[in-house]
Length: 171
Image (tube, rainbow, N blue to C red; front, side, top):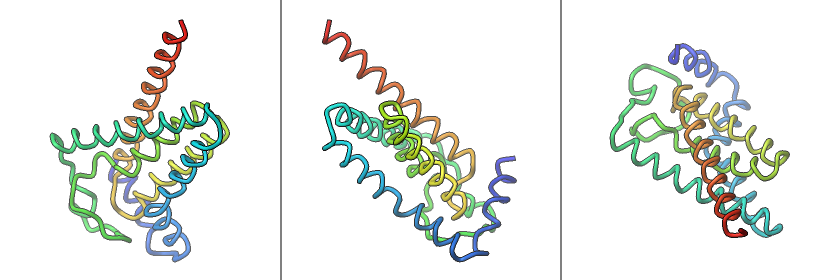
């Protein structure tokens, strides 16, 4: 099932230059939009500053989780197992988890917990990022879904912990 869904998405790559260009752009450069949003939030007000701080902490923790998973688990990338369309070069490392997806979902979930409108926009960009990683041939759908789950749960735990610490400090 995982390979079938991957193949149905990836087989569309290489057929339409504008869409391929957009998917490559999203896959490689969307992180700059997330950085810009975090900087914007940092300078907006104290509430947004806390949200951006939580987002950075969550992203850092998901990177540590990524390192731990890759130490103990290796899943070959799609192009390592089969002949698939690959639009941009990739490392030969493990497919799971997707570091791009981990980072964008960690940030967008943290933002969503503070600002539903901006967070929703960022979550859409995160979904597009995950989709683009399948489109360019680097990850399976399960890699994207698992990465989104790990990073979203990390962000929720960080948010709950920060709110609990703030609540106990006020008491």
